[in-house]
Amino acid sequence: MFRLFAYATLSLALLCASAAAATEHRVRRGETLTEIAQAYNITVEAITEANALSNLDQLSVGQRLVIPIAAPSEASYIIRKGDNLSDIAKRFGVTVDEIKAANNIPNANRLQVGQALVIPGVQSEGPANGLSYTIRSGDNLSDIAKRFGVSLSDIKSANRLINPNKLVVGQTIVIPGASAPIASAQISSYTIQKGDNLSDIAQRFGVSLAQLKAANNISDADLISVGQTLSIPSGEPQYVDYRIRNGDSLSDIAQRFRTSPSQLASLNDIRNPSRIRVGQVIRVPATPGMHVHAGGHYPTLDPSVQKTLASIRTKSNQWKHIVIHHSGTRTGTPKGMDRFHREERRMENGLAYHFVIGNGNGMKDGEIYIGDRWKRQIQGGHLSSYALNQISIGICLVGDFQKNRPTRQQLDQLEALVRYLMNRAGVPASRVTTHTLIHPKHTLCPGKNFPIDSFRDSIAN
Image 1 (cartoon, one colour):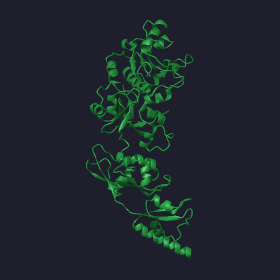
Image 2 (cartoon, one colour):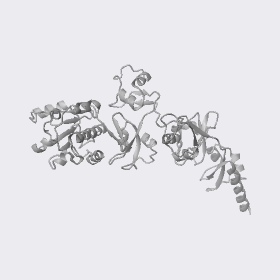
Image 3 (cartoon, one colour):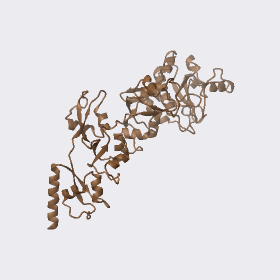
Image 4 (cartoon, helix red, strand yellow):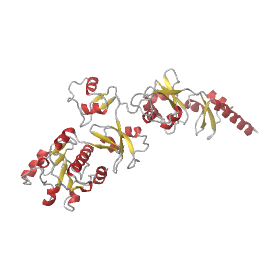
């Protein structure tokens, strides 16, 4: 009889609670009513009344409690120039479909600047100085703190959270001091890395060189140093789609686009960085020299290299192969290679290769040197075959790829150069090869760590 009465009372409580906003909580081992109340930012009395509890100390594991939640008004967002629904959804941690449903939007591509959107799950009325936020599946407190640009300790303190790992879907928490989430694309500072220059950094973040110099009190754009932290004035980075290739890892992609694996994971909602798949398309920060097209992106040549190459008259139908080599040394320069080939190898035309690509040791990382053999359109000296040298373009990457991998910049510029040569000289992708593949059993060049399979996949697209 008592059980029937208790069940009827709980049903009535659920019915009454549904008139206002409510959620259900299943009691976990070790939980107290005080902890549950603090987790939902409500009073013990409110839970006691909603569930007709007479003994506050007798909670049982698995017991279902009605949690009354006041229904605050949902936040709104005013559309700005350049906005799209996907970016807005990611910014607020909701889905595109949820925003479309909340705003009765049939076509996500027809947004108007100045249009006000309701953002479901984010409330505009919380404490005097903050927002309310409703926990969603997959949320954790650290990510929420980053999204709103507040500290984890501030959220814990404002919500009296004893255990921040005990978040419940549907739970409402206060975000102290927040007026809107921070867009994941908004970066206020940038640490200069090897190979950077101020002009490229300005282009990447969508600001002018003058703005960047003024914000950092820089008079000479050439006087910057690796490790120096720059303040980025107003302006947002640009993003492009990147299609994951065979052999890619999130760390490699992050290094390539001068970002971090954690930022890529956050930007693309990647839960497990080791579980990315070939063909998957992710958003990455745009870098200088990137050409974007319908299938994703591919790197392009530096304008000065393009200009020089365009001035060279290529012999039609002469070149049948493009052969990739490594120098076998950690450092190297075209001048040093030329001297070695002239004095030690007795080559009257000097440098055996048509092109050399640096690795940051002796040459800039990814720097392309156009050799005299290409400028004069004469045979190479890079293969132990007179016949193959007559018809094969030789490209040497500085480095020992038996021990290390090529740098990301080297691979990018190699891809850009090979694409250019394939088009200009009419060499098909099937005839882009390596020294060891074109001359089996003669050499290991360019080493076991050169990713020939993934490189061929890249140039085939």
